[in-house]
Length: 78
Image 1 (cartoon, rainbow, N blue to C red):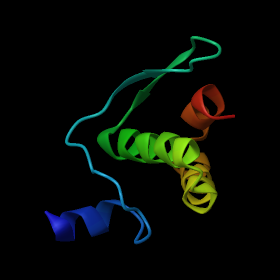
Image 2 (image 1 turned 180 degrees about the horizontal axis):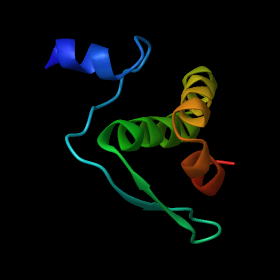
Image 3 (image 1 turned 90 degrees about the horizontal axis):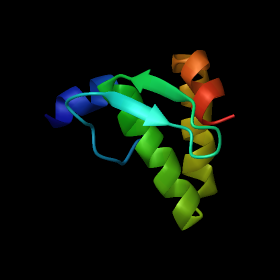
């Protein structure tokens, strides 16, 4: 699994890699986006980094997400 994790996510990613995606709602607008397992894993890492004040990881995650799924980024994180 560790080798698979490295193939899916950037080396700096230190969160859990989920096996399936889900629908996520923007807490401010209520708009939703369907995320893949990889995107959901990164979304949760970004949210956790924000809560804990780990802004370096949060910024890396936001940059990754913006490139990986611009539409979901605009809906959930912008």
